[in-house]
Length: 398
Ligand SMILES: *Cc1c(COP(=O)(O)O)cnc(C)c1O
Image (tube, rainbow, N blue to C red; front, side):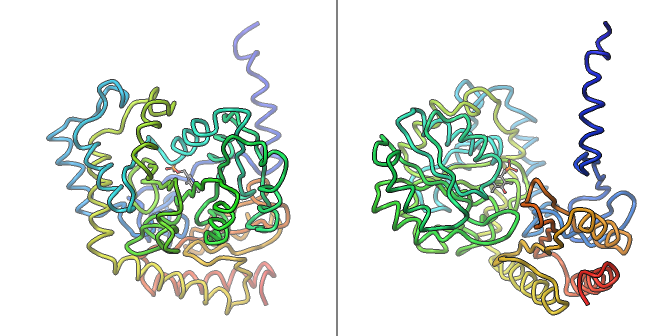
């Protein structure tokens, strides 16, 4: 039998995915990630990146990356605990800790790997209990699967359910308990009720891990994230952030106590077994944090744009769900219609990706939009006009 015959199941699997509308075709970005980009040969208002603060093409970040290459070379060729930690990596971790108001921080290769590492390493025994919101990110779900702990899924932001889980037999018997939540939920743009979560955590002696991938650079003073927004920095033991969204480079970090850092750099598997960031990435992240500190007006502009766009969508009659942040879903309800909506908008010069079942619940198929601080009022008005036009054409709004 030939090797290709052995792999023919892939054709069947792909045909199945295609039938379900889940076979991915990659779009090609022909410019930097910009508020108005060229995608597959077409100039479009780009409402689909996580480039919240328009830093992906910022001259300071590009210069920092180039200078770092000249000084440090292009890569580390080692994992962090062997000889993959340069002083530039250590400096960035100190800077992140200071920014987040914690004793220490550790940078991982991505937000995905830091979530996996924390869930797996901190919840290492059957005697532990991990409680996770049902809409948490895939990396938390996968991390929880790798953890040896008992796992409970809490209904989305349902504090009565969280209390029940914390009072349940698994919780009473547990050696350690960790509550994990996204700070800002990535598909709906709603915010975790951290004050209530923290109050329950304290009462039932659980610790709290908040994944602020979509809140870093977006919420709280200078974009410090949701614990800072709610004035709960001292009560959230584990703050996760990503360097791949607002920070516009790549990476993830955990900010917390020195002992948390000591532990994770010793046992975090992605940290131990996967190589460290090229110094250009590290330098880019550091320059981005300087911008958060020095140009808070970018964050103000982001929120102004989010308000303008969200209000415009509502005025047109669209259902924007529970969004409270620059992530604004436009709920369509059925997969074919959501895909058609996205395709027609693209023809009209607006890129807003459809997100469908099974990524979101059935009947909640949507376009997911994210404005950035770099969009001009003209870009957003153009996009709103097209949303209205195509929305009426497809009978989504009147
Ligand atoms: C994007 C995202 C991640 C993953 O971050 P990367 O740095 O892209 O790996 C983790 N958690 C949440 C909530 C996210 O939205």
